[in-house]
Length: 299
Image 1 (tube, rainbow, N blue to C red):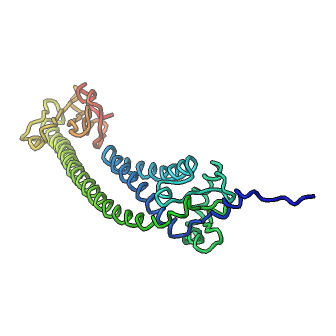
Image 2 (cartoon, rainbow, N blue to C red):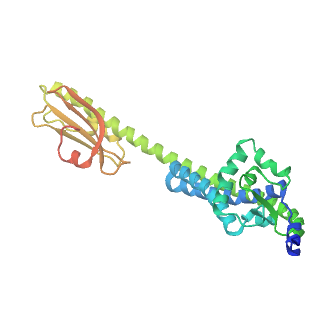
Image 3 (cartoon, rainbow, N blue to C red):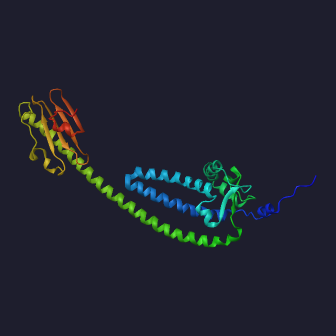
C-alpha cells in the first residue's frame, strides 16, 4: 500500500499562516472601540435631545446591543471588523475555514464576557498561547491570523492613525458634552419656571379658600354671594396663563375653587369645601370641563 502524500499546495498554505499577537489585536480593538463609541455618543445624544434622561437611557441600551451586532455581523460577512481589516487580520476556524454564525455569536458574547470578567486575563492569553488564542478563541476553536503577513509593518501607520483619531474624538466628545450641558441647563430653567407658576397657582387657590371661611362666618354661615377678586384672594399675582373660578352651591354651604394649570393643557387645580359635611378636599388636578361646569366639589 503506497503511503499518502500531502499535496504541495496544502503545505504552502499551512506554512504561510501567521497568527496575530496581542498588540496587533489590541490595535484593532481600539479602532473598533472608537467606531462603536462614536455611534454610541450619537445615539445617546439624540435620545437625550428627543426624550431627556429616558431617551438617553434607551440610547445607551441600543448602543450596547449595537456593539455586539456590529462585531457579529462584520465577522460573519467578511471575517473581520473594520478595526481588524485596518491592521490586516481576520478571524477563522483553527483549520482556516469560515466560522459558523452560531460560533461567532458565542465568541462575541459569552466568550468575551468570560474573557473580561476574569480581570481581562482571557484577552491577555493571546500573548502567551501557542496559536495566540484568547479565551474566547479557545471556547470555539477560532484563531486570528494575518491576511497577508508581508504587510505587518503597516501597523506603524495604523498606530499613528489611532493617535490622530484620539485627538479628533476628544474634540467631538467635548463638543457633545457642551451641547448636552447647554440643553440640560435650558431644560432645568424651563422646569423651574413651570414649577414656580404651579406653586403660585396653588397658593392663590388656598388663599381663596381661606377667605371663603372668613366670608362664611361674616355672612350668617353662608357662602352665597362669595366671589373672587384680586383684593380678596391675591389672584393678581397669578401668572398671565392662569385664571381663577369659584363655584358656590345654591344653598351656600359648598364651594370649589379652580385655577387653570399653565403647564398642563385643559387642566385646572382644584380645592373644595363643604360646611354641611365638614369636608375639605385638598387640591388636585381636574379636567377643564369640571371647572367650567359649575361643580362645587373636586370629586
